[in-house]
Image: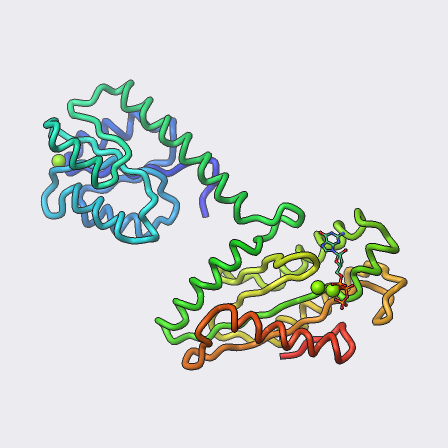
Length: 300
Ligand code: GH3
Ligand code: MG
Ligand code: MG
Ligand code: MG
């Protein structure tokens, strides 16, 4: 992953001179990538998930700029990338067509350097603000890990992917034991601190690139572990590490420190339930059993 504060811009033009001129103009503004035609532009976009903006030529041998934009907009993974056409087509109809296809802006060649630079700057500022808002909308403000909204979206996505690729999917629910008594005895501030430390510990346990740890609500966390994993081993490590935090809990009838109960399930590719809700319900039922059987334990 690249530095989130430095946007990446892809310059696409078949003329080396044009590429160089734009690159020189923007070299202080952003991280730059170059492509010489439509096909290599799309390849670049597939390889680089962080591109914020594409400066796109229209006339190029092979795939032209309009087709590149059409394909970008048709794919959910690339639909939000900004596109500014930089083109010798100065006809009003061309400009209208580019904008209707979803380009953010349209500038004519020969370019007026200061204007292009200002437009790129304006676009990147908005794009960075939007990225920050998106990040905030996915984050739980108390603990800094993912929130329920983000988890629900990712779970839906993971279910679709599992169905398509015939991979299995593991899911777990983790609930802090006797946390109401903890709050009552140590105060809400101490409770908040404990939730932060537990969240941090869980995030350290499920750390493969596609694993997701989220705060589902209150003192309840969820783990999404795509692919084949030993969910019981992961949860057992989580349970142990939370205990090892050694957060004193005198009022617990389970242990002298804060503990968690965990319920995990593995949904095999061929037998994924119809809805993500039923997947969550299954994990919740296992968690409930772990609570009933004495807490501070992992059931799968
Ligand atoms: P169990 O072992 O059965 O899970 O018992 P419990 O006391 O943990 O469960 P219960 O659902 O009765 O209580 C959950 C408590 O979690 C109640 C609430 O005060 C506390 N809680 C929920 N969200 C927060 C939060 O953001 N901060 C703090 N400090 N406490 C919270
Ligand atoms: Mg050209
Ligand atoms: Mg609880
Ligand atoms: Mg609870």
